[in-house]
Image (cartoon, rainbow over the protein chains, first blue to last red):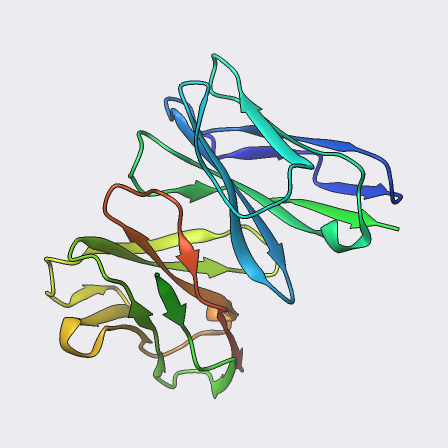
Length: 112
Length: 114
């Protein structure tokens, strides 16, 4: 079975721009979660989606948003990028809610 | 509030040595889950183990073993006869009953030197 895939793998943007990251979960997995990883803050939870509904949201500003489609694929969007948004964004999927999460390779975002 | 502490920031060992990575957690829930993930330089988090709070039995998987002690709120991870391929950052994580989001520790960077 193919693992979680994330596109793009690397991205360079400038301050003020917006960005959309994509995540395709493992086939059959219905829950998708997003995490941000930075050297200073470590791994922090962004959102969780299940059946196209946001189930949980972490403590991030409204510039961070996401959605899930009917095929369980998910996207997250960051508007008005700031330098501090530079991070590795990791997507994880699980078969159902509350089950083990399996992570993708991440998208490395650099904001200049 | 939930919290995971990995006090060891970096550990360096010589190949074939045994090494233990410490994890201490805090939670008010009686039902919770503990995890270990490995992050090699490629960046992907690789799932290693999940444990629920009612199962304190130690687990061994090949060269890996885990020691869960509720009395000390610890979930330590031991690698026996370490290998260079074990070099990575290892994260301990916690999720509470009914709540999927993982709370991660800061990670321990393990370097195994040949």
